[in-house]
Amino acid sequence: MFGAGKVSEKRVPIIAGNWKMNKTTVEAVNLSQHISFECDMAWEAIEVVICPPFTDLKSVFNVLSFDHSSIKLGAQNVFWEDEGAYTGEISVSMLKELTCDYCIVGHSERRGIFGETDEMVNKKIKALLAGGVRPIMCCGESLEVRDARQTLEFIGEQVRRGWDGVDAEDIAKSVIAYEPIWAIGTGRAATPEQAQEACAHIRSVIAEIAGEDAAKKIRVLYGGSMKPENAKLFMPEPDIDGGLIGGAALDSKAFAELVEIALKIK
Image (tube, rainbow, N blue to C red):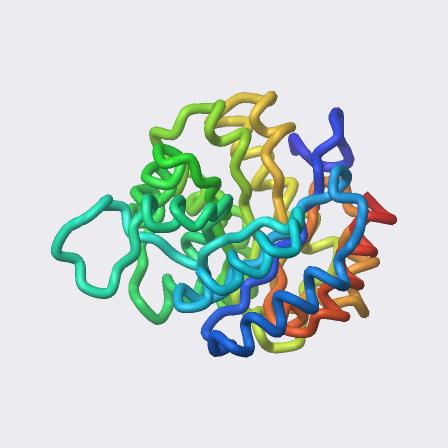
């Protein structure tokens, strides 16, 4: 398998916080201020990203700008058209105006609750890259798929379809987050061995579709109940380049502790 046990060049780790549908504007200002204060670290060695709800993006942007923070801003979703009669949707240009560097696409909650397909994820990835925003593409299996021992086949297909038609250079600068659905918000994390196997397989699929250079450069994160108590188990794995953090991202001290762990280990 391509990625297993091999890191041929240094990849800057990412700790990205997905706030999901949490925090009013006032609460978002308070949390982002605390995160900015807590995460005063060696920014050249790690990227820190926070992804608040759409209604909080402007307020969080203002906090980070005022603090001259190196924390990057990300969104939780996007639509692939730039404008038009798409009630409730947000375009890439709207995100770019708020200096969003990243955007999550294909999260299992978007797929499961709102019916988002691999084809829709692919359109969003292409729109983001065309607009200069880096996608964080999520993939992951249900408990049924894992119990059927079809995990690698399932996530491999999500990766192939999600990045279909995207050139190798754009893939190389993007991010993939492996989030086993059965471990999201449940407090139950995959084992480090399970997470490494999946992340290494993702990297091997990227090598197939975009070449080994892109596979070496793309960053692969683990999500699914990563927290300070278990991060030290996941971070040393060679194909895990950080985490997409859910619950722990809503606690500034816990989030900062995850950043510290990534800095020390990676």
